[in-house]
Length: 142
Image (cartoon, rainbow, N blue to C red; front, side, top):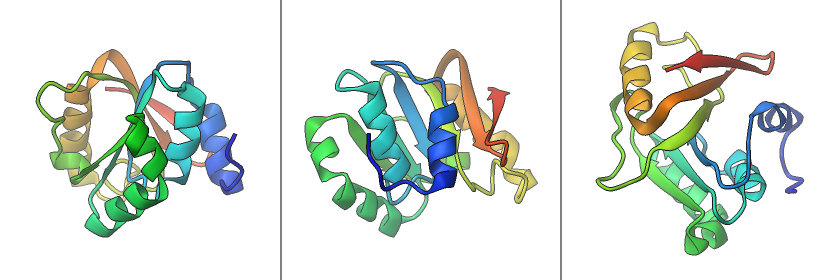
């Protein structure tokens, strides 16, 4: 496992119900430390998509995770969570998680429902969103 995670991110990743081959969305994941760890845990048949609103953050993730991008196990999408869509033909994801994302943690309540709608469209039926709330995660049925 990757060892460069902060204790908080380590608790978050440890709390996720990950399995080999899972498809996972990380919302606001730049610069990619948690995504790298999740990719290691889901293995080469899994996939991690990092959705981040910051072009600079996406570039940092692509640079820091270039080996995973080249292997096809990690990809990025530059978009706000409340206004993103999967690329045409992209398979749905099993779960999503977010750490310190204002649209999902209560700091921007007007963005919460639009963000859930976008995630609902990107997840398999019954897919769950896990939001870092300091416990470390709260599961949200989307």
